[in-house]
Image 1 (tube, rainbow, N blue to C red):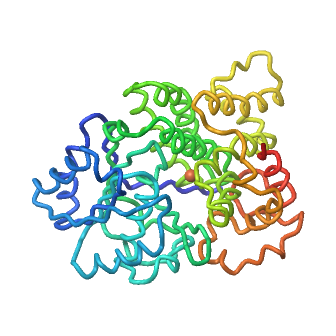
Image 2: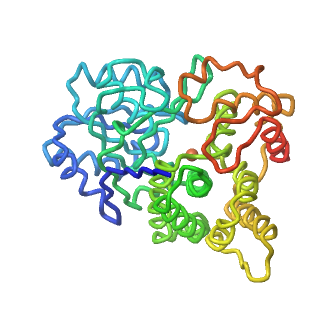
Image 3: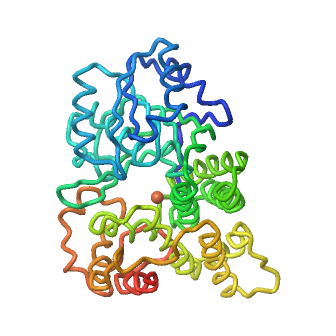
Length: 401
Ligand SMILES: [Fe+2]
C-alpha cells in the first residue's frame, strides 16, 4: 500500500520559546498580522508579551479577540474580508483549538475569496492560505500542526472540517508558559482530546509505520504526564503534554481520525456538546471496538497505557486498555458517560444516522438525509474496523449513564 507523510510546520518548543515569535514572523515575511485570540487569553501577560515581541520585530498588529467555544463561519468570513481590506499578510493565533481553527479559517478565506463553508471538505480550495503562526494555550487540539480546521456553520447546525496541504500552519510555538493560566478542570478537556487523536491515528487503516510510531509515542507521553500536569503544578509534565499533543496531531493529520471523532460530530453540531466531551466519552468504547480486529496492536497500546500485560489474554488486554482510559478520567475529573441532557435517549438513533457522512465530508454532509441510513449503513471513517449505524447506536447507548 502506498502511504504519504507530510508535515511542513516548523515546531519551536520549550520554556521561553514564545520570545522567538517576532523572529519567526519576520522569517515568514510578515509585515502586518491579525492576532486571533479569545476574551480570556487576550488578557493574559504572555499574550501582551507576544504582541510586544512582534512589534519589537517591526511587525504591525491588528486584533480579533472574540473567538468562542467553536470556530464560527460568520467570524471567519467577516475577518477574512477585513484581512483583505486592510492588507494584512499573516495570521498569528494565540489560544486553544477554536482560536486556531478560527485563525486558520481566516487565513484560508483571505486568499481563496469564498465563504468558509464552501472551503470545507478535503482540498476544496486552490490557493495557499496566508502564512500562519500558532501558539497553542491548551495541550491540546494539535491544530497548530494540522492542515485541518473544524468550523461551525451556525445556520445549518453543522460542524464541518476543511483543509488540505495548502492550509498547514507555517510555525508552531509550544511554550508551557501559555498553560499556566488554565484552570485544572479546563485543562483536562483538550488533554483528553489529544489522547483521542493519538489513539485514533493508531487505529487507522491508512496509517503507516511513521504515523504508528508517532501515535504510540504520543499515547505513552500523554498518558504518563496527564495526571501530574492536571493535578499538580508540574511544569515539566505540562511541557510533555504540549509535545505529546503536537505529536498526536502530526500522526492523525496523516493517518486521519476515527470513530470517536466521526460519532462525536453530530453531537457537537446538533446537541452543542463540546468536542472534548464527545470524543473523550466515546474513546474507551471505540478503542475496544477497533482493537478487536488489530491483534498486533493490542499489546503495544496496552503498554503505552501503562497496563501490566503479563499473564493477560488478548481480550483481557483490550478490556484493560478501556479501563486504563476510564481510570485516567476518574483521576483527572473527566466524565465517563454522557448525561441524558447531553445526549437525550430519544435522539440516539438519529445521532447514529447523522454520523454516516463521517468527519471528512465537509459541506457535502449538508445534503445527506439521515433517514436514508439503516442498521447496516456503514459510517464513513478510515478506522481499521467498519462500523455500522446499528453498532454506533449500541455504542451511544453504552455511553449513557
Ligand atoms: Fe479532536
